[in-house]
Image 1 (cartoon, rainbow, N blue to C red):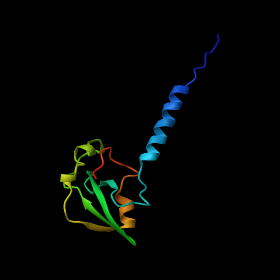
Image 2 (image 1 turned 120 degrees about the vertical axis):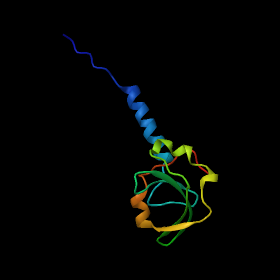
Image 3 (image 1 turned 30 degrees about the vertical axis):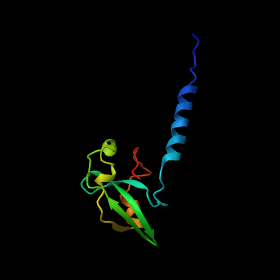
Image 4 (image 1 turned 30 degrees about the horizontal axis):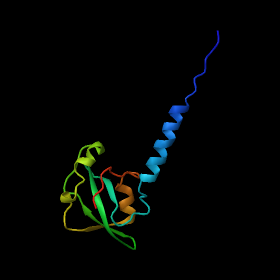
Length: 111
């Protein structure tokens, strides 16, 4: 009996392309920039977004989204400019890294 070995080149190629796209589109939690939008995990296991407005020393200033969702799959449904409050808040950079999802960037970005 001869064993036929399948080659998974198309699958491997797809995975490599997806990884390169994800790495190019991801934000670094360690180096946020003004205008970046991050997915935030709240204490009650809900998710929201924050738009970075300023970075000073060890403080990150952000504008929170008014809405929360139960799953990150629904982040795009709340990520609109009208959903962000006008009041900027600040957080220590160390705390910011703890509550942000790893390198998660919503598909739709506000300007």
